Image (cartoon, rainbow, N blue to C red; front, side, top):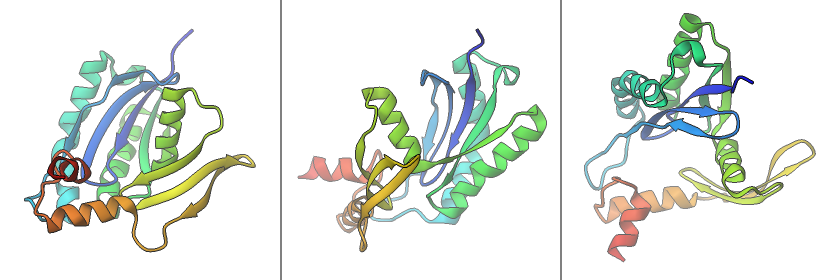
Length: 187
């Protein structure tokens, strides 16, 4: 039986990644590149999108070579539709649309939050988790109910990820590899 293979693009913030994954969750490749700003500075949408444009084609090549596949073996193209920063998200969306036309492959738009939850379900084997989702601009309690994921609670002021990003900038810490990690190293 033929295994289903997806080529996926994630570029919702300062990291651009291109991964090859099978339907059962096996990751065949996952190269990525992070836009690093000077310590104390955040990443801006336009500059972040320019970074993604500069790195996406080499990442596609690396993903296919590492996975040992050709475009003919890909069943679909996936990309992060949101949530995230508009300009960086547009890079993945545009690349996927072009590849879809060139390679005659269907497109699957993916919700960033749901993708994280589904990855967690695969890794942990959880059937019906209630999740505290903490990422960048989101801090939410999410669960599956009545046929879809639903948000049961969320912050109304500042998300934990954004709070850590801002605190790291105040401390003049780098965002490489991640602001939260660098805060932990200081304290």
